[in-house]
Length: 292
Ligand code: 5RP
Figure 1 (cartoon, protein in one colour):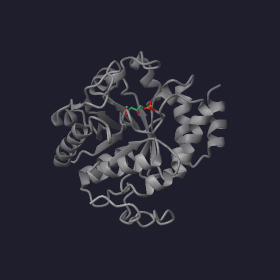
Figure 2: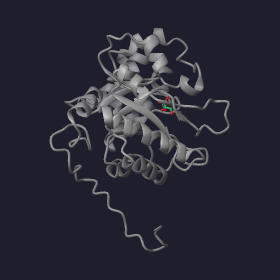
Figure 3: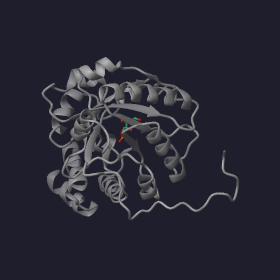
């Protein structure tokens, strides 16, 4: 039932109309979930702002020890006060994060590729549900490769994790990976985010792009924006600000924090945009003051 040329009516994202079923709960699309799910989502999304600063340092699962993540044991203690959630592999969490860490945990549960592969899109589910429960994960992160060679297996992985998570009230974070032959366009992200949300993911991680507000409006669950490759700090703060203005409910940032000369100040400045309504200019001034 593909639409033929000329049959589609113009799309209307109703950008000025808030999402319909929030019913007082602070996480988009979660109003009808059960207590356990809401509890985990509240460990991720702050109940006052409804937003989150996630610090992603799961890169080692396919990139090894990337620059800035050589010594997790030294880096993570600098950042735990500045962020709401740590996103990592179970190996990194168990070895380098103290169990008395009281904020959210986004546990990476898919794996299978490495930087020396030509095609990164083939993954498996690498963590048992029981181990995610043991680690008290607040959500489980699965890579999805819409349009790539590994699309079917990544949708299979995502669906298995969502099904298992639903049995134990643990949300799933669907990570939109841009497949080898895909481009970072709003058309691609509209397609991929909506597919992953309709499959049942409770949170979506994707990239910022033009017309981001339409992507966010058409996605019935919260979007957190990935940082991507390291940018100058001022540009990364502008990207964060535009993402929030466009309807993101937070950032899930890695390299733009841990490859900054001042990771804690950068995470702190991102937090000001996400939770305290700072503009990018104000956050940049704040970064410059705190990075001294
Ligand atoms: C890998 C991931 C990473 O966690 C994330 O993309 C890395 O964050 P950043 O791009 O900000 O360094 O999900 O696909």
